Image 1 (spheres, rainbow, N blue to C red):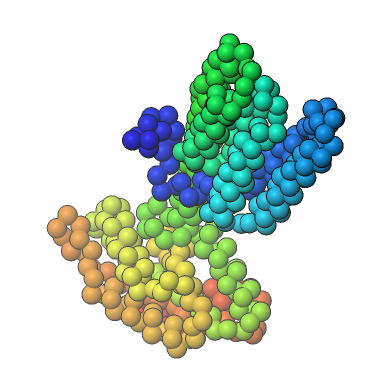
Image 2: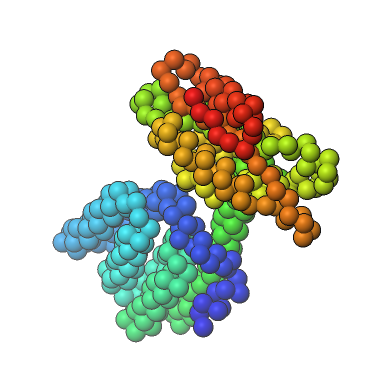
Length: 375
């Protein structure tokens, strides 16, 4: 029932709830540290009032000092623990523990006041501060604030004597008003934070999709030439540093111009998409496949020797030969010529390997096409 009520006002983040809390954890830690510090200073500042109230009772004043210093000591320990945590669950437990301790402390603090003295100012500030500043879940904050208010009202009505009934009635009304204002405030704050986080995630996802699409050839779903060369450059640097095997395949569709002239450019697009699908199914996760231009493609094979790369190329060549493209019910058969090259110590850049693989591809075409040529 409570969740349904809260859902009418708070933005439901669903599966993003954990990400939302983790995203704000650092800010919540700093805000909580500041809140605990302010609470400690406020409690310490009340010693001046204690000195006035207990000026004729030095022993009671000393107990008040010990009582307040105890609160500050526990708060300092809580600050240290909170600053060291990096997990939302532990942070929530620490904050819930400290807030529960603070509520109990302030309720007991009421008994140090004279029997005819109300602590209305604190009684109003505490619930509102929990509503506005506590990073805990709404239900936990409501339990804490109403627990504090219930204890305060019990003390005011049954433990205090000599309090004017009108003053007592006004203090009770103030409690109700502060809960209404505090609840509205926390709903507004939490809703704003949740909407901001959801907008941030949506913008982040949109940017990632745009970045992904900018790196993908829209027709063949292989990498664009620019992105392919960026990855190829990184792979070559890795090869140059660790001297691990690294091979490159250059693939070119045979008689592609004839396909366009005979069946139309749409048929050519279908053939290229089908060819790329075959390559993508044959490559490993760590391999990189991209479009170099027109009907020419490149395949990066890290941790692969020349002979291993030749096996991959022959598998692709034979698979493509046996996979006709379906163009409106008509089967279009095509073949591919593939050049293979392996990085060597004499290569100064990735372009050196690519140039050799490209030369091998043209050699395969000169030898009759539909075949693999390697160094």
